[in-house]
Image (cartoon, rainbow, N blue to C red; front, side):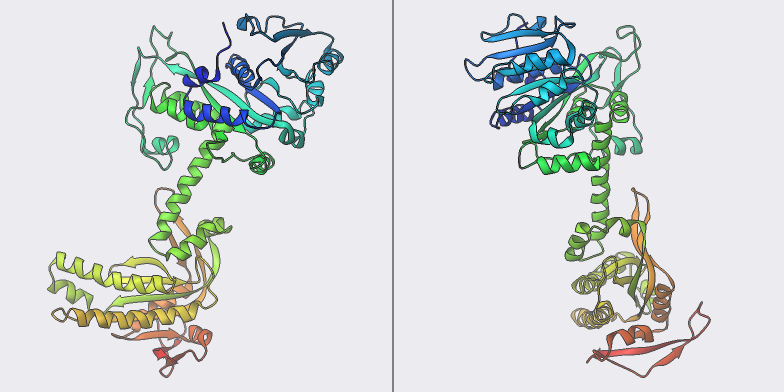
Length: 512
């Protein structure tokens, strides 16, 4: 068969426009090494020949090298284009060293296959021209560097000389004779499509006479392509050294995960095939894990944006301490509890829809005060609100923020009452305490809440229960933290439920 053009080959693959764009970006790079990788019969040699045809200048000599014990490697591409020739190499490492040393400095070199015999001489060839080779390995993309380590190619050499790794991965094509709609549990859909809407056209195949019980006929190719330029080399290096999935712009990186997902969505492969591919292929598995981590972070961000100010959320999601926030950590916090007085009788006097609307208007006032002072809304408990300062991010002035917030709530509730004179006035009582608490996320990926737990929290709640309408009770611990910034009433001892000893607290009157 003739050598296909890169345009023709990419038309038959998922993400064809993105693949073609990367190929054209490759042609604009300074000459270097291009590697085509994948398991046996994955089509990597066909792709390498298309890349060679694209990269060769008009009239440039192209030399195809293969080992003498594999003489028919290029037979399928006959006749070769004018100016192309095939040279067989014998004699092991010495033969490869002599053959590649004698190659014309201006020739574009294509080598099938790069292995322990040919790799040393190939890697020693002078830079300044295109050198293309296939590597028969199931490793894809930048992961091929791990396979090259066995050929004594260092990561540094790989990053310095390789311009592109174009990998092919084959997936069994679904048998249309026995294909049927797939029925998946929500957990399975979340595994395959984390954070995204699963398409309704997913299919599986049970096996039939047409496919000899396999559920598949033929194979489809998905590609992992990494273009290594000066700008992206640090990212590729970090992915290699840290063993993580590479994150890149479509202009230089197309993932096998994206293409395999597209084959699944378009019905070319079955759900069972896609799930099995994730389990078996290291890079596909890493990319799926990365997607799930992103979905988890997105869900976590959604949790926080409901309870913290945008500025706190931004700092939190940029923080390197996100793991400790999720898993739990000891924090010095100041807790504020705010509750409507006489809510039970109020609920009895109002229709449910009226009560619902009034509560929402009231909570809007409270939440605005909390977010203005960069507090975190821990939870709503009926008509009560639990607010935390000092978590999830440390706030050196947490106590001052809590007291200022309580005064703002009291003032805003008064203004709210004045704006609705026909309604029974709302009166609130508040309690504030500071101390050590455990702060973190409780729940699962499906349902998660950020909260703080500990005696400091319980004390604040108990003080709120003793506060009268319009009163803010502040513990001696919190009062000591704010110094002379606020005015207080005389301290009193309170007997609180669940506390062995009385707790000293003062009424907050105003700011100083």
